[in-house]
Amino acid sequence: MSQPRDNWSSNVGLVLAATGSAIGLGNLWKFPFITWENEGGAFVLVYLICILAVGLPIMMAELLIGRRSQKSAVGALKEAAGPWWGIVGGWGVLAGFILLSYYTVIAGWSLYYFAQSIGWTFGGYPAGMAAGDLFNEQVGNAGLQLALSLSFSIATIAVVYFGVSKGIERIARIFLPILFGILLLLLVSALGMSGSGEAMRFIFRANFAELEMSGVLEALGHSFFTLSLGMGAMITYGSYISRKQSIVKASGAIVALDTLIALVATVIMFSVIFSVAGMSDQVSGSPVGMLFISLPELFYTAVPFGVVLGPLFYVLVALAALTSTISLLEVVSSYVIDEHRLSRPKATVLCGGAIFVFTIFAALSFTGTPFLATLEIFAGKVGWFSTVDHFVSNWMLPTGGFAITLAAGWFMTRNATERELVDGTEPRWFHYGAWRFFIRWVAPIAVGAIIVAVMLGRDFS
Ligand code: PHE
Image: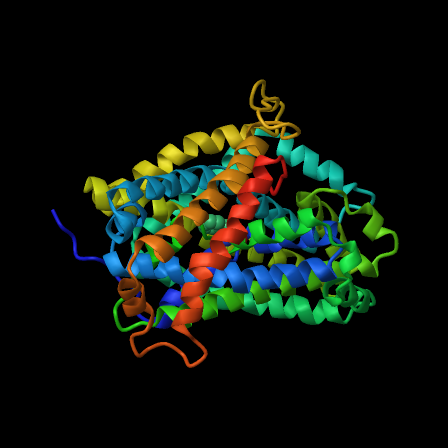
């Protein structure tokens, strides 16, 4: 049974859906946190260079591999580079499976904080409540954790169930403009706060004396995570691009928007943190801390119009996470649809259900459950959640991304890639020879450096 392939309805639809995949918890909790840890400025500059030199060329490579074959990750890589490359596609599908299983847990927290903040807006923020206690209470409550992540999983399945144009694209078209709007409101409010100047200096004034080698590599690793690269998500989304649409233009827009949003989110959070005396010391060494411990309280004590902006902010986190989780589920389901010939509704429910079984493990690893809370395969990464996050971020995405640069740069012919990128739709700034140089040399060497560094024991999760 062969079903006609669903396509994005327009270039805008593609850009919004792919940007929705890229913008997620990576932008809202991971990036601000690693920027904080690496002392801002120089780190941000290096990250921007990584995005341009590695992220952008690989984005084009993944989209073109997908469009050329009109197949999802496994089939597309086989067709692009040879039968053995199906293994790389399978590696990506597995990465998507695992990544989605734990990403959903943090996504679920945004639902909780949304509900709480609505309560605070109308009932007042409980005086004297320590935000850290509230956080520990919610992560420690097994029933609550399961309910939150189950709700999020159902939402994800419901969108993917309706397919590419009627499900994924439609949701992205509605949610992304809302997300941009909320972020703009937050930015305006944050820039009016007393700490905004210090925040800008922290983020944009480069001081290379503060940057360590590990920070350079961390910037590179994060550029994969944040752009949804290295595991076939963009290959899959690329397979729904029609011949009339420009891969180069779309890549430019996706990368630019994702980067802009990460910077804006960081400016907002740091402006708030620097505005409150003593807060910068209090922001603990945990990314979850900044988003779910420091901020909730600050919205109700320090931010102008915080009673409105607080709930809006947690809606923003939930929307950003949802447009990422649907792309993760799409990688897995579309593989089952294309390679095992299941119908979309069946494939979506089956894959979503199978992934949720592992979500249970991730959710329960915060509740003191034996084994799940204590498992330690990688030194210092205690519990199921941290273990799988470490494995995906540090091993699966970089190795997958490295393989994709080889497929596009060395195993596909010049002719094949040139035909996809230079088709009369490309913008004037694009130079095919430059892309080819980056995908053959710059990107694999840089990514190879991460992998070697990880082998030597560095941690990028
Ligand atoms: N890019 C997403 C984020 O920043 C995470 C993601 C990775 C989504 C890989 C899909 C595929 O949160």
